[in-house]
Image (tube, rainbow, N blue to C red; front, side, top):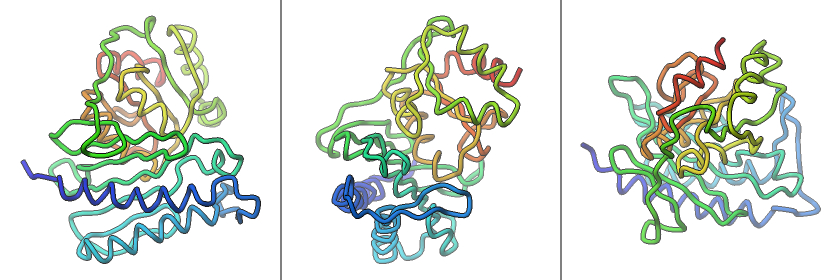
Length: 264
């Protein structure tokens, strides 16, 4: 099995630089915010963080391709870095500390373009999570100060804590009835949103989470972290990995049961 330690170390270096840039502008009164064509916000900090990461990758991994939320695709090759400079921009611009930089490395293999390294850094929460294929998933502030992540052992929806982002997306896609039935059947629901519920699934404090519409940069890092923590990450179509345009992450034990509610 390939050793992705150097790539993981690089992901931490990239995240350190992004954290410094994003925290410097967090809650700044003169923060510049624009509206993208899809009507979602982008701040100067989003762009600055992605530019920092891209510049570093050009120097350290010149043969690798890059896909980022703000500046698109650059380069070609079997390895590709996928970047979401600020996942949770709406939180960021309102001063809510639940946002993170997501960094993933994918490689072409039998299953297509799949994540092999993932890192999620949430500096305003003072939290970081990461994983590499076949090496497990961890949380801590550095590679040397980390604890192993493991998903929960809950086996039934009725005992499960389930996370989501909002009701609007489910309603927009005609999937609200199934989602509401799931919320009635489970033990507890919370609308944390963005990266955080996926990390809680990985660390075992939640049992499943789902979103009906996502981009690859929203999911790539989350997917490998959940999987390496012992969980399951698929689209709502049941396809494993982050390529379905939506996601269900779980501890694996109740994945099919949750999926049945959402696709009813």
